[in-house]
Length: 145
Image (cartoon, rainbow, N blue to C red; front, side, top):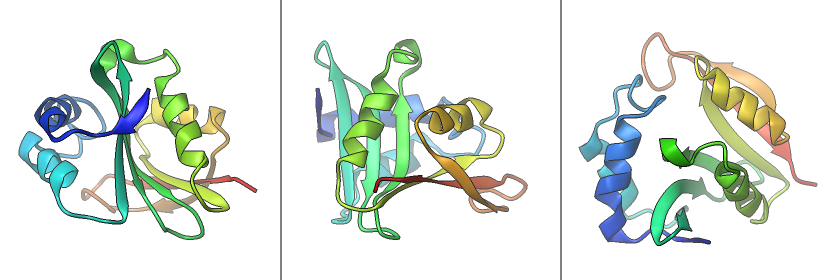
């Protein structure tokens, strides 16, 4: 089930993300991620994928953004990966308004680049040093119509 993120879920999700790549390699902290997940931002939807009463996937979707929503965060806790949860969250995101669905993925994150490619995204641009000096991001787009 995909539903809005509940405030009490933020600490555990922020900690999980901070210990996973790409967030670990890019230097994100538990506190920084928790702040991002709780700050007031009316253009950002924060959704979770719930399984057996637990939030096991996270989607942060910014809309509007370049004629379609932008996936700021998509994460699935490690022991639930490769079960279709990330694809389900992307399908939910694609159902929002817009002709495009956008995401940036760290260039070093080959697994994520492959995942997005399998889900219909095409690499459009390389953004050097966008988040962390020495690390590049790849802007990807999926045309929705």
